[in-house]
Length: 215
Image (tube, rainbow, N blue to C red; front, side, top):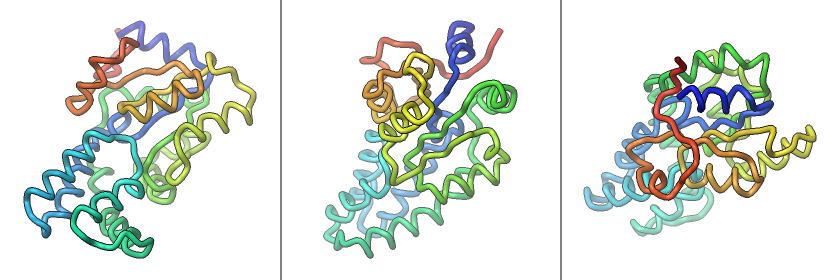
């Protein structure tokens, strides 16, 4: 664990995912997707939950048309937005109330004036700002990139704008999309291991952690 801590401490810039990295909130969103599609039957609801959990880090705006197609609903922009709004009402407070990933909050609070912390998340921009504000975390992040900004583009934009080399940064995530965002930009990746990303743990040979506890 000391090696993980040193990896973080040595970076000038840290890109953080949110769900599953800062808050243990992935299952909260799984339950919300399941609840949203339960009126179409338990089998469909279970299928939706399984797909969501297998594709962590992907925006609800990409997932919702898939699920609506499964149940025969229109996938026009208005319908997708309606379902996304319902989803947001189900999850926002639940995410705020979900458990912290052990060790992350103290690290953010202790180091945000020494390092540059950038949030890259699939949660919609306005929603993640409200969540960070409620958690008193907004000031910990110099920049916040939420949906619809793709994570890979967000990382690239920040590095180019501030002229950082990829090896001066690290990206902390828990999903394949986080890994891709890091690899696309040649940024070192740190995986937060969870029960939902066991398949990724088997294929990823780099550094990983469950709890950020130093000492």
